[in-house]
Image (cartoon, rainbow, N blue to C red):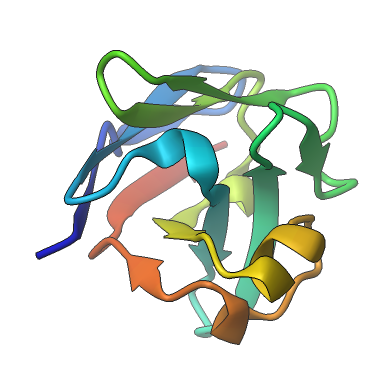
Length: 129
């Protein structure tokens, strides 16, 4: 079956950096919309970043300039580099992916979560001030 597995979450101080990884098995990421979401303490969901099949990325305004999404097709893994972390970045981060035509067409921050069929189990990021 298809599986996504996040890693890299940790507790850090404000201003620090983390790199989250999403290791994928069961499909080849290059043909997929790839996304990162955050679930906050109140269970609110935020789209954080996306990368589409040609490598185009989008970011939530609150993370633009601080977070970078990338992929390594040889490792079939995609990443979220998080720099200059702030306490409001805290939450559980999930990676997600989909290759349906509607998902690829709407692959950008703000896309509905129902357009992403494959999800990991999340990794916790806690940023203290």
